[in-house]
Length: 183
Image 1 (cartoon, rainbow, N blue to C red):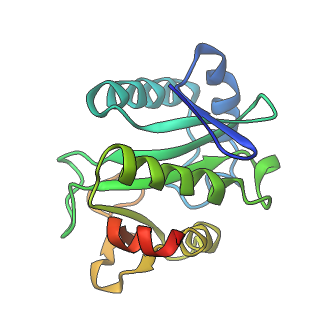
Image 2 (cartoon, rainbow, N blue to C red):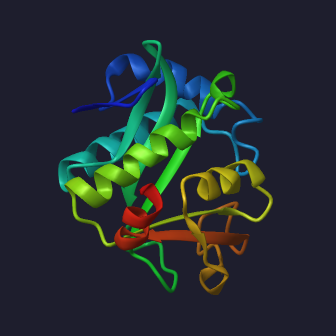
């Protein structure tokens, strides 16, 4: 499965993605707003989980290529039963890119395409996104892609080691709002 935007390719993962993904996830700057950096084994497990979600849902967190170079992921995720908040389980849009890809609008470009895929191709009603209160870069992406701040849904993260009790802010976008926003 492959999608293209003006500057990016969104695709399913391949074996060659593991090493650059492990490098991204071991970078303390990239993982600043996560509980910790990830080991190579944790990256293997995460990629396996992403692949399983693609099989279950037809969509997932796509590997992002910029000029044929792996840059990280952007895409859609269906939260599981272990993630319990007032609005979950739900569909979320998320991203994690290598530092060399920051500041060029790639996350926003890929996230907009992910929203399009979710709403047009999979008929999702609402897509959410959330981050820690201090992650202003991710919050800026949420704003740029037309998502709406949902302070009524803010939560303290349930159960994830290192995040348990950490305050998170929430944004969302409905299919109707997306149609209006994209013009």
